[in-house]
Image (cartoon, rainbow, N blue to C red; front, side, top):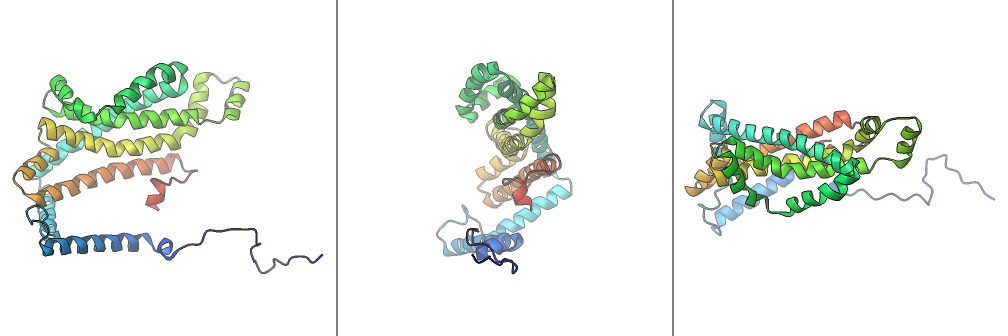
Length: 285
């Protein structure tokens, strides 16, 4: 029998590897820049062709000018900075409330049979309802101030945190639970020292989804219930057919949402350092 010589580092015939395409080898900045250039060119072509009215779809240059105007107003402490600060508080307070309630309910659902059998069905039923329909209720209860917007933002962001926390607790290793029980650990010790650390990856998945949903809740509340935040500025600009201003305000809101999302990703990387995240960590590489 002839021995196989692998001294040259040749791979055995049984090893299969997926071929890496040219697009996969491109650096991220090249891919993102290329997509942005293609998007702007397509936008400009549609604008110049006259297929869409300039009132409905302004050109990239007009939008860029308005983005600069809004940025200048924010930097100089104008009225837009006040509106942005109001929306910022609605988002942060709503997210903090959603984190507190969602984490608590997630532990109840994931740790206790009563929570899974009795509490979870009600949570699922509430989550299937259209969230916008609750806005008038929050307005009637809490008024037209910031409280009703915070409540709607927290309401939308809570369920993903509940699901992520409960799913993470359910995913704990059965052998590890048996080992903790053999060592005489109490239920609380097992939860804190074993289940919660193992549940962190799925918990952060829920937190990242909630970071996106909380923005929608705050702005929806401003659309339907007035207010003095960016949502109200968007509503006023849309009523005046000032489409470049609408686009500009939306872009700055997206920057706020991205900042919240990447903050969650940053915290995840510090706490869940042993696992790569395809949703957030992979994007940040």
